[in-house]
Length: 545
Image 1 (cartoon, rainbow, N blue to C red):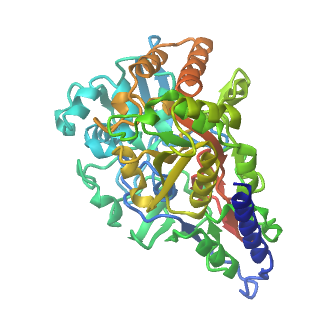
Image 2 (cartoon, rainbow, N blue to C red):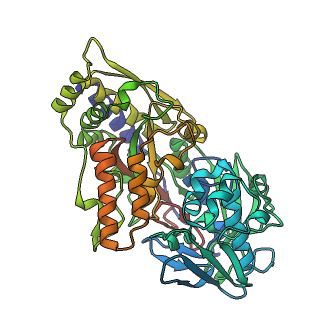
Image 3 (cartoon, rainbow, N blue to C red):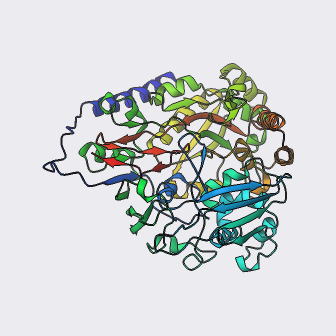
């Protein structure tokens, strides 16, 4: 065990050492004193499967959409809601009616006026889209009056008379809820509540979103797109705050291999690399090129399938699940992974970054302390030994970090009579496997900055595909449902901790591991990049010197 971990550590150290032997001169732009073009090239790790706001659920797609799309609010770098397309919102005393007023005079990139009806169409279209966007729309379906029935029927917008979303006039729309939602306004900083044009975006399909013709309402607009290769964005002259947008052009190039991104950055072929190997953070050569957000909300964990498609009965035993958690030495794990503070130990399902009474929610309690002796005892009590090991498959998506972590888990679990088969699949289909329950154990990450309750909601029975649930627990379902009805802030936060105690402390449905802050490199002549608390970049305020 120690020999294998040390071998991996040596391999990673040698890789970092090899990188540190390289150097790149960054001199003048060679433009004879002329102002440099305000254009950049950004490398992203995945192709553009869709830019449909009703369908997006991965960070990679959001990297482009966040710059071309917009909603009522925008969440800033600290997670604070700022008015974007919105001017004001009023909430009724019972918490069931929200009246939204958008700014006057807003236009799409093609000059068409933005209206309240575009918000109504966008929200209703998201609700009725179909099962493909079940994850994205779950908060709307859970709270908006009549939304559940419309979603179950995959209804057309024209047939949603009973859904509680309507326009009051050209710049005002109203949303009526069936039950209060503690964080409902925050949903209006996300893509699921973005305005959508019915003349360009038909219902129940998304091909239009990557054909390059759809008008933008955000700071940038699509000039061209090749979904497997690149998306070219240019400044939107009709954006409401166009005077503050300094960047003229951004080309997002698809580069799935993190080492390739690093090499392209070193050569000067790209200006921003959004996904380079984590060990790059340990390389002093790039000390002046790192971009690290002040606040990053993300949870990276192991998900154990105890649902209806599980074919390993042992993983339905909470004591076996606890043993798997107790066998993980996170300090050793993080030491091997390196990352110079970009990999942060996480001892709970809810990540750092959510406030509770002026402190961080995560500070209240930790789970899953390393205890190899107790882990072995639990496994032996379940009937496992060197002669009779527990065998199961661990699924992860391609990428060096995920592969390294899988190897570490394999070695640590081998100490408690576990024989793991590692299986890797492409990033683009990884969550299809997970959503369909086609795994035994897998890596999972969530970087939702809306509210801690959203993390628990993901794994309620109704939020997962029928018959594919990895967690199917009516007790958890009832606890989450009760939390939604609590309006007192103190009682609400106490309920969240109670849910986490049950889900992680008692049942160990998931094994928290870390928060992985993406290692982003920015050329030294590029200034003004910022990301929101989920790491999604906004490029409009960039200047090139």
